Amino acid sequence: VEEIREMVDNDLGFQQAPLMCYSRTKTLLFISNDKKVIGCLIAEHIQWGYRVIEEKVPEISSENEKVIFERQKAWCCSTSPEPAICGISRIWVFSMMRRKKIASRMIECLRSNFIYGSYLSKEEIAFSDPTPDGKLFATQYCGTGQFLVYNFLNGQSRL
Ligand code: COA
Image (cartoon, rainbow, N blue to C red; front, side):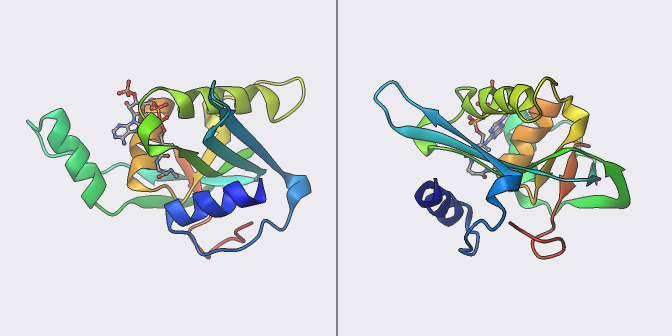
């Protein structure tokens, strides 16, 4: 798991730092039929998330233009904390296997396994410092661009 995390962190451009609180994190690996790790999700317990403030996409833009706009713009979030339970510290899918709902399936699995006996709602999940890909994914998965985020690189303690 530690080796995979290092590889995922390199891909995400995160500074290398070992996970400190193993007991507070859950790691899910998505294994392909040929026994390769093609997806990884690391989740942690959190208390608060902050809602992304949606910026208006310029009108009459095609889907392609929307994606380009989404990739280029900076994102902002509210300063008011909202209660949250589960933080997605990292989510990663092997580049050749993206857009096949692997990340969506990993989050579904996380929602039913993060807390024994309960199924987390999308409102109880927050994403740590989402990348442009992560933001496009989270917007689609949560059904809103106003999903919860947390961490802000060095603001709160990264794992
Ligand atoms: N561009 C536009 N929409 C995207 C998208 C992208 N790059 N990635 C996901 N979506 C949206 C789509 O609507 C997609 O449904 P569709 O393919 O039917 O249109 C929906 O989200 C579900 O995506 P899914 O197939 O479950 O996601 P994935 O398995 O491709 O994984 C990431 C998404 C973000 C994990 C993957 O792109 C990745 O590993 N990126 C590099 C690491 C990274 O940036 N992680 C995010 C950290 S916050």
